[in-house]
Length: 257
Image (cartoon, rainbow, N blue to C red; front, side, top):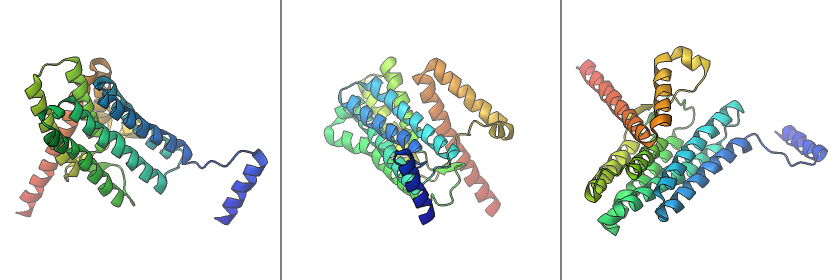
């Protein structure tokens, strides 16, 4: 350890440039994730709901990129894990919670609206804390509980869709937002198992061709139909996780008998 530190210091003196660790690069994308979440909160406060929704989507993109960069640079660290969780709490906890509050729940009353919308932030915090406790030796093949980015993308997709095509009246929108908020918060703290999105590599395509093709088709639909397709795709992802967990529970009960 000391030898490595000496080499780093010698490299600094030789080049005149302070040594930058490998974890710096993925951390930049993680910070951009956090910044996007903050911008989404500011835009929600200014009633710029379309902009807020797209910044939540952009935050999810940065969240994906930072993990990809960390893997290819072999720069995973405890610091990166903690920073990623803090960023996720801002972008996928506070930002969607404030977005649903300003978009529709504010009108049902300050107390009721705050309590309902805060469930998304509290659920995200509990979900992230549980993930961090079990992160040692963890393999990202599946998740216990709905991932916070999936919850935030579902909210963003719904808000963007309703903003572009307002098909619900005021009270219907409030009821839909209330139900969506409660269900998403409950799924985040549940034990429902969700598959991780497959990494786009030749090995993954060879091992899981059907699943990879399906995700690619969904991605293309989102590019064509935008928010509507995003919301429907997230609902399908949520529903598949619930059905899969119910199927596993049923099998366990049957075999135990």
